[in-house]
Length: 76
Image 1: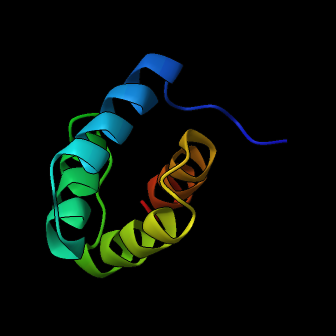
Image 2 (image 1 turned 180 degrees about the vertical axis):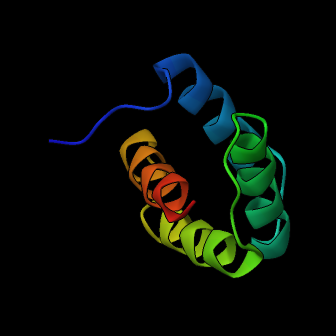
């Protein structure tokens, strides 16, 4: 069972930023890093880029975003 670390509202807001921001992969990765850093997690830029690619490949669903953020947060 996965532990939910982030609220649905947080995930929805982050997803909207990713979708509406017209961001490239590097910018999306920076956004994920800033999101996690603001919640006390450290993330390597490389891991964030990989996660951003996977989220994009999954159609940026809230479920895929949650899953990738949980993986990134565990890296710490």
